[in-house]
Length: 254
Image (tube, rainbow, N blue to C red; front, side, top):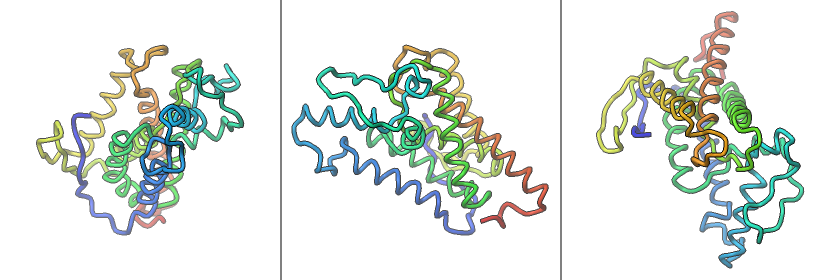
């Protein structure tokens, strides 16, 4: 995006343990992955390392063709790398949320989780926030699968789940103002609803205009962002409905 959020002005009333734990988990998984220089236990040989990276993404990423049963296990892109064995396909729906393609991919996702995650966690409670994060990440991966049933490129990254957090934010705390770097250089304080709303509109337009069409490798799963965001809105509304029925304020829920 052209806008980089820095801070939400909503004062959280307790430590956002779950949001910070998710950030830590994503960072640790990346540091232990073969594309990170810190993972010294992988091969130092350039060609072997390429195969190890490919194996890593194919094993822990969610591949649409595998999820739909079109193929048992997708073939490696390089014929010089060994085939994947022993992969648990259904588990890849969850493991893929913590796998990132590079440091920039990780940093971009974690910035959004750092800014918006604590606010949503504070509003709906820790356990509900964790459930929302995982559920919207799952919905995002399934939505991307439906948009590319035979795709054999692994889906990786937390952006689907984070889109779900943004969707929930639009419901539970849209009145906040967010300090944002527009075009990554101009600081502005924007309404929260405008920032996350424009995010969804952009992702939707990129999705429907064919940037995420089957057979086109844009490198970004826009369908996952769209479905994750919608799932976040729906689950955010469900949480509000539960609050209305129980008479409990969201700020009292742990």
